[in-house]
Length: 65
Image (cartoon, rainbow, N blue to C red; front, side):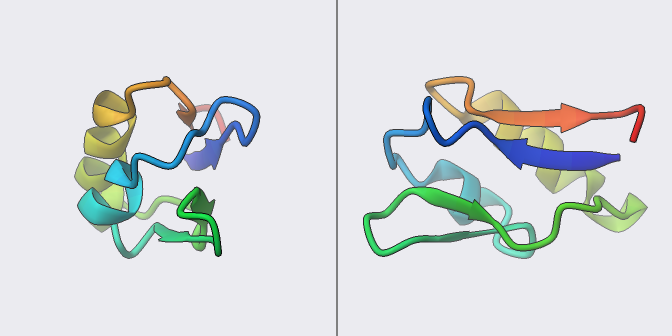
């Protein structure tokens, strides 16, 4: 399972790195950055929370990866 951010959609609300700090960080403009793309079973709930709470739908989870 892999997590990504569509940088064209992200406007920098910061919910991803607030709710899943082991998966995301912020860039110099407050936009989300993936710091760990491979989602381990221990981080799956954080990943799903980040996906559900992104207002732009920029955070995506690929469950086939």
